Image (cartoon, rainbow, N blue to C red; front, top):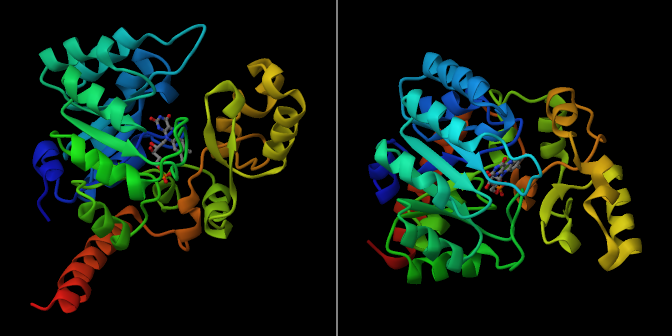
Length: 325
Ligand SMILES: Cc1cc2nc3c(=O)[nH]c(=O)nc-3n(C[C@H](O)[C@H](O)[C@H](O)COP(=O)(O)O)c2cc1C
């Protein structure tokens, strides 16, 4: 399959693995790239330019296909060394960066000067247009269904993707709720050039997370996510568990008076405990509604091959069958 995204990133299949905190290590990024998609290391998880440089080297050892690094900008009192991370990316020979969280204007000049292709992930048409106007090469359009931060507009992909197609001239991928060949065909029908998946890639053999996280995704349904931190305008879609229910009770009780410090126990520093140790009730972890479509734990290659075969079959048999050859 050839789309503007496969051409832009020089990959075989139009499937990207979005940056994921404490999931997007070299093992997963390389597996996705080796299977013909685009794998991404999550820069923020590594935390320092030195550790990121080591992770990039580990990824180079595992694949000679293109892979990228996700740079997420989060509100923080002590922001990480972003210029240092940009340098580690460039020095490490990485040619693709996914930015997210806020306007990536500050990192574009050095990245562009080094010939790095930048895809910006955002949750609205207006932010997509902004990304296009400041020189991003592509956009990842993240609908309300997505795991992680869906923004505050709550526009699902059935509306968001065709709206993005109406306005954008640069290539874009559909993100949020993508799981299988049906998702890919639907995304292409809406005008996207491929898909970006987060949650689905966690339930794969190579994802370097505890087996209990993968099993929780297989067991979950589309009804098992919750939105947290809405009163702080930092909404996050997470898997429901007792810690999340506790957090939501605090949000309800405190209303507009809620401060980040009130919920710190449920959200700060919980990722290593959940992802690496499998302590599934340690706190809130990002998860998309797409959990309802996850029924197994294949290898990354099995997953990607299956998506491509299913998409082709839907297009060649079901769709052509409906309209007539
Ligand atoms: C566990 C988890 C952690 C994530 N961490 C990040 C992150 O650090 N930076 C980022 O840009 N996106 C992050 N995301 C969002 C994904 O990259 C992707 O946009 C999202 O998962 C797409 O929706 P889906 O889960 O329905 O596929 C995370 C998602 C999950 C499920």
